[in-house]
Length: 535
Image (cartoon, rainbow, N blue to C red; front, side, top):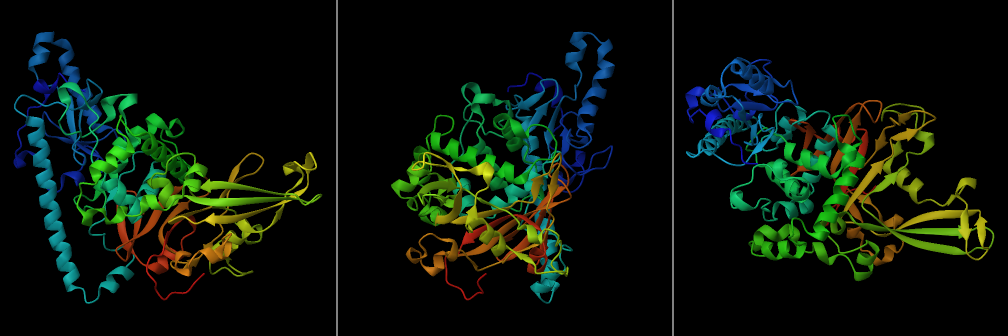
């Protein structure tokens, strides 16, 4: 929205002497000294924490209004109001009197000048920090020694995501998806979508929160978030704009209570798919791709072949036109049901974006890899349990069309089509009479060489190299229940493993990753032949 209070509230000029030292994104609140979500007042240049931390930025505005209540209206307009502040990470501008984000500027362009000054301070601090870390790396004898420290050295190029209030479930999924190269590259290479019209058309959009229900775009905010990660320009990014859009279009995730990361991932992928199918803000997917075709061939390498994987039959089964979501995560299951009375066989094809696997009951008491009393549960055990022949119980009787009544039957799943990225969800939460308990069993999983050929319906039609998968990311739930605890993620980027814990990103090693109690596993189809052990 266009704020009418800028002229009386934006009084500072870009002068480094008025701002704290160091990187703006890591400035500390002048009250509680927290460096999470810092905001700078554009009246007095003081720094306070945002409403998702301790709310001192809003309290600073409220305290400044108390002395003004006894003045006349004309006097209030002449005095600085302390109503406008700027996010030191995303450079979005917010007015507390309007209670909304601001898209306009003063006649002298002071907001933009402050924004550019903060960006310069951030870049300068980052350059100095990168030079210092490079010197540390040069003094290290072996780079592998650095990886073995397991968290003692911060990652150089990775960017964390700030926790906006129990949003670790979202942060873990976003970091995992950002490390799936084909998927991430597609969104990063999409052109920016202009969501504003009229007087503000043509100006750069820093926030879409004020645009109303009909103009928010999940694809656009998802694109912005992915672009902010792995640039190395800041230590942590605040996904506030994306979270606001999530609130708008996914009512289940409103509020600040803990949510299920798998449920959020499914909602996110489904809504991205639907928005890409129908186009967003009047722009069709085909128009976006046509505009994107002007990009250089070198920048489009990740997008080649994305839409050539699905046959017309497959696209019909996936309910509409294919998008990058279904082209990368989409697979097809064949569900076979056999009547035990007459032998009639029924086949049904179901598209999937991920597979939810039960942890076999015989392993549910084994909580660590090194614990004795029986074998360790492996990912292969979970996959075998999913695809094994199963006799349906009395509550799931099959309606046989030949017998014309419900009969006992068997059920078996086959994978007809494997996706480019195989997402495996381990069912760690299950309902008892009144509670949803967590299965804390350790499940052994391979870092590379997951062989899916034995689960295929027609394995002879797939080459051996197209059935092998290498691990790209892991989401881990820490704690005892779905409504509590904490989510983190491990992901590999350019041959190195990183641990993503909200705003903190650290280098780690493979030994640490394989010990994690995985909740969601992202496996990427192997493209090049490599000598590795199969699962």
